[in-house]
Image 1 (cartoon, protein in one colour):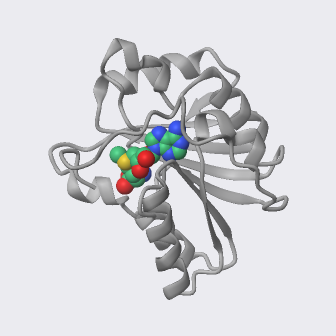
Image 2 (cartoon, protein in one colour):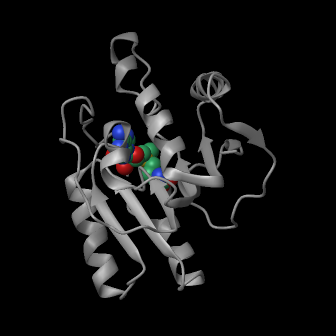
Image 3 (cartoon, rainbow, N blue to C red):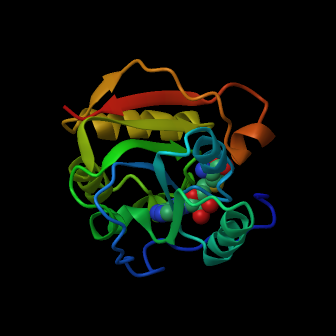
Length: 189
Ligand SMILES: C[S@@+](CC[C@H](N)C(=O)[O-])C[C@H]1O[C@@H](n2cnc3c(N)ncnc32)[C@H](O)[C@@H]1O
């Protein structure tokens, strides 16, 4: 996924909330999963667990669907949706065990601030969707965004915890070698 080639979709206008019936979980969710590299590794390593990827861009979702079919990854569901406004349409309360957010899009321009994934709605609905003790792993290469995320979460009921990341790297992380990503883990309850 190249920054130069890719055109941004405005998540405020596209697409409408996804309505899905994916069951009660427990799920491991990857929000903004991109091409699903990270999910694929997890799903192959833990075949009995169920994984859900949410991705905004339809073309990336289609590509990932093909990979899922080709590699017979029956424990992954990929859904196209804007997670900042769709979590409650996709996940039932207490259905997520772990959530990963790797390299969410930074919105640098002040006029684009509203496009952030980390809306109050996203934080509230993620809290609802997580089980008690459930965790959100977040990593980014943008220090400013990292500070904003920490500030947002400090105003919620989530608590920051120390927990090791899985050894697998997302596609974005593999292509970014400048410095280790900024990472934080939050827990419900
Ligand atoms: C920089 S890429 C990182 C992809 C992947 N997580 C990785 O680490 O390789 C960010 C991804 O998040 C997706 N995304 C951004 N905002 C989103 C939103 N509100 N809901 C769902 N996906 C979103 C983008 O379309 C893009 O594929």
